[in-house]
Image (cartoon, rainbow, N blue to C red; front, side, top):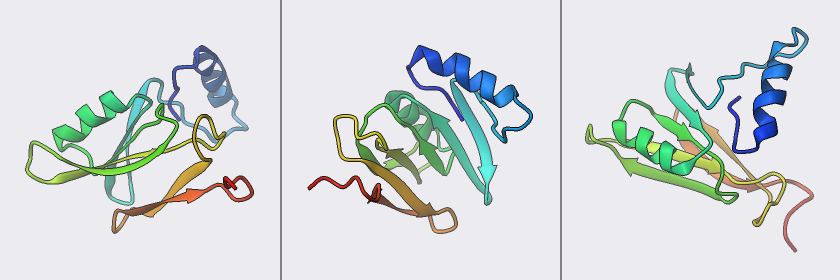
Length: 120
């Protein structure tokens, strides 16, 4: 997990991650990991995510903050593309309630509505 721009996030996420009963890893402001042989970077802000995507150091860069779902391929300085994803908002803040589901092997992702909360 990383924190967003809610100041309570810093306190509560670090507190929850310290509880041995929880299976959380709290990275702080940003984090990088390797999952299914994919290099992944996470950060809350889209401008930071776009900058990290440009480096070409990651296969996938995830961000939040926009409260709308985005899947885009960004041409990076290495001449290839980095996938940037914002899953949107499961709370429906100023946009439809969404999440992103995908396959790390193929890097194919799709925006999906949160069941039961689709806009009518």
